[in-house]
Image 1 (cartoon, rainbow, N blue to C red):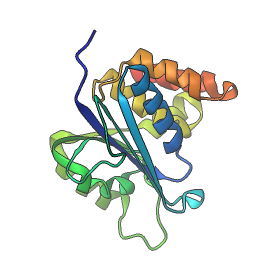
Image 2: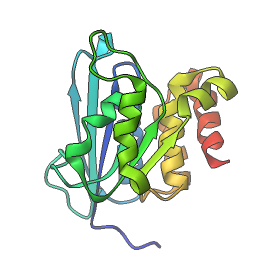
Image 3: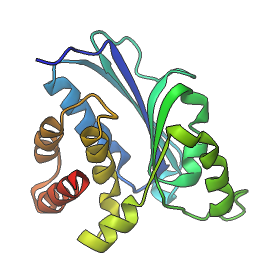
Image 4: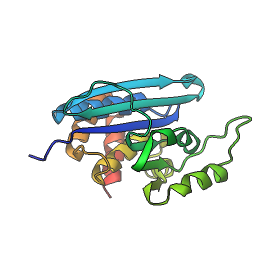
Length: 192
């Protein structure tokens, strides 16, 4: 049996409708399945209108607070480029940013996609920019699967200390039957 980690702090950032709550449920179920204490939190903007949605998950031997403190994030998972910029305050020196190369223009927004990417690319080694929405749209016909693809990729690449087979079991438990086949395909797509 693998050595249990003391704690792991993950923040998922995106806009309403990208499935953050479902991803949070899958990750929490997976961490529980692997014997960790788990705490989660959801912070919503106007999620039904594409506003900001931020979810936190902390797991480990014993976790007391559901919120990831400033400077304590191990992994920042970004479903949309601009939203990730708000995650910088959670970063520490070795925080990994796993970011979907997906941009939602905001009316009157201060960033263009190019400007947001320019800021993100200052992260250099700690940034993993992935065409998750594009891959899921091209291969599966649904860009909404980008989140499942990204959490699966994080597991396969060992960016998160949860086993891929446990993530798959949690997907099968959490995702409704009518969407399950596509979500399993997104999981498998992240493996290749």
